[in-house]
Amino acid sequence: MIEIKKNISLLCATIIMASGTLVAQAPKNWQHLNFDDNGIYGTESQRAYDELLKDKKNVKVIVAVIDSGTDIDHEDLKDVLWTNEKEIPNNGIDDDKNGYVDDIHGWNFLGGEDFDIYEETLEITRNYVRLSKQFEGKDIEKLSRKEKKQYKEYIKIKAEFEKEKKSTEDEYGNFNSILHQIERSYYLISAYLDKPDFNYNDLSRINSPDSIIMENVSGLAMALQGDTTINASLIIESMSHKRERIDSYFQEKLNYNLNPDWNPREDKDYDESDFKNFKYGNNHYLIEGEKNGHGTHCAGIIGASRNNEIGINGVANNVEIMTIRAVPNGDEHDKDIAAAMRYAIDNGARVISMSFGKAYSYNKGVVDDAVTYGRKKGVLFVHAAGNDGKNIDVENNFPNASNSSSNAKIWIEVGASSWQTGKNVAATFSNYGKKTVDLFAPGVEIYSTVPFNQYDSYSGTSMATPAVAGVAALIMSYYPKLSAKKVKSIMMKSVTDISDMDVIVPGSTEGEILKFEELCKSGGIVNAYKAIKLAEKYSK
Image (cartoon, rainbow, N blue to C red):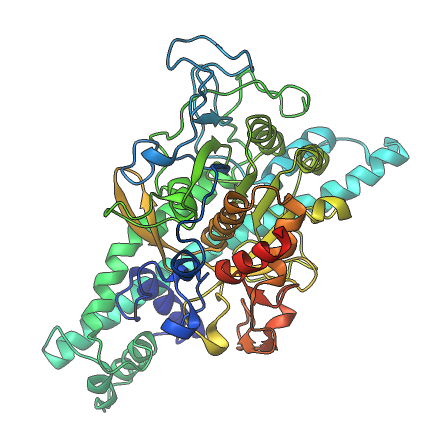
């Protein structure tokens, strides 16, 4: 009657862990803690303030957050926003003549004069659409040699797109089927036991001659993960709370991300192949469709007002957050990212925090050129490695600095670490790469700002990245003469070294073990305390 699968257990664990019902919670603000005092591999930023930075003078550092948008009215962020003093607010005039009207706290490249964008397609979908228009219905034999080469790429992209779409549809169907079965099993066993609350021990005592009862017992036992302290009703309650969110995820992916007919910029004044015009967009920093506050969360990790007796403390204590909206719910456009980078650079950002990425790139060169421009202006780029549990030494993750050894020296690729220690120190979802990822940083259950004066815990390399950006800004603030290249070098040399620690490889279904040094170049976790000490030494 019931098919017992390994993914039942995994599914339930994922749902329950996401809700925080069954697992121990990370300490709030654990990203600031240190191992010696707290047994947690945080950034040791609090120790840096307590022991090294007291009464020490520093300067403002502008950090650009290229993301989904930021709530500029948030109680814990409004005092740390970058403000364009050359612009008169809301007068509809480009006072500083930089090509952006009323860009007071940054800019939004996901929109225009009369529209904003939230839902977007994936880059593989856009590639499929572009190549379909070029080759669908064409006589292959009449193609030129160059076109035949492009046609081979089209066949590859088409197969990958169709595979991704079918995989998503199957996953959605399997998810709903498993959820339905677990709920059905709960109500059946609840009726059998004649009580709504029961746990793993109760299940283990059931010995019925009815095979259907025993099959349902087996499924629920897997769902409870062997935990004898949790009532099964909590699983059902948690699933009910998460169902709407997960349904929304799959529907958005199918209706927008993987929908070839979806184009939010159709009939708009936007040419994604025009890589010379970056003067477009508006000054909407947070739009109604921005559902989860991703950009606001990242901004808070970097620089939420410290010691103001509300909310949280950001990593850096003297920053100005420049908010640049260029990351939709889907894959970002290369043109938007290049435009966002150039805007940040031209307006004085020394650090650019980028918690986004994709597996395909339409025009990597336009982004590479923007990075080169930033390198020449002394900017440090900090980028998330991604959350697919994959080795990005062998699988693509864009943007990156792979085109230039010089650009790589001012680019930090960040993996996510957990507040748990030992073999669980690397976040299960984090991408990794001994050649590609530079270091790891706290990225699991990070408590930070979200829109409308709220706070919440998120997980991802998206959270690890602003932690690293915050440490970089902290160094630049107290040692402003250090170059971006030198700051990266300091951060790489000053990590909490756990290179020899045995850890579970992120994304491993069988619990594969490797030394941590196999996951990133530095073999460690970013450490503000050690970085400040090293910066002091280098500055003398």
